[in-house]
Amino acid sequence: MNPPVVTPSNELIAGERRLRACMLLNYQQIEVRVMSVKDSEHQLQIEISENENRKDFTFSERVDWAKRLERVERLKAKERQSELNGKSQLTENSTEAEKGESRDIVADKSGFGSGKQFEKAKYIEENATEEMIKDLDDGKLSINGAYTTLKKEKQELEQAKKELEQEKENLEQDYESLSNQKDALQKENETLETQLEQALDKKLAVDNTDYTTINSLREQLSKWSASPKKRT
Image (cartoon, rainbow, N blue to C red; front, side, top):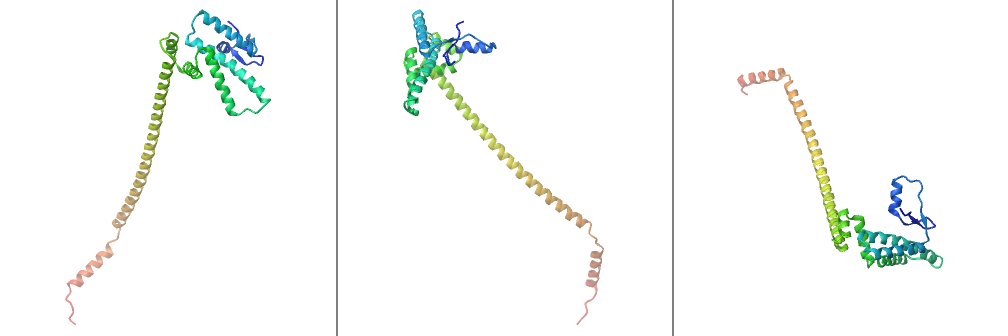
């Protein structure tokens, strides 16, 4: 296995997968090749030329080479920025232009043609299934076709997510409304219970009334009504 390649300042240029595998195996130390950015770029171009002479790159291989080139170009861009920092202050626009230029250089050298096409390829590599990658490697699927499919799937997932979030919001609103109705009914029930208790108290008060005096008054009224009225 070829060792990973790093710059003298220990920035990784090539061998990301190998390094990740060593980390998974809990390696404490590994051998690396130290190369300057210019030497690394030259070595990478030689490897690309040798492989292009041997066979056509598959999609996976081309993306791998392009990402390695991208690291080299990014380091070269950092060197250029460091030089410019000593002469003048960099603006945000100049930094973005530098990124775009590096992307186009990588796309041209790796055979993707344009920076946009390279960005599509990276998006595919990060989001596609193994089956889709295999179809790309076998030439059964184009980069544009795969990219369109993945973007459509992403849009559908985002739409489904929005619908679920909306449904969740609606359910929360329904729950709040039902909770308010429950509170209102509970308060109304408490009021009815209070009124019922008051009515029962009144009934008990009536039932416990002493009717002796009332009956005596009724008898006196009856006698008075029955006696002859005095003439005046």
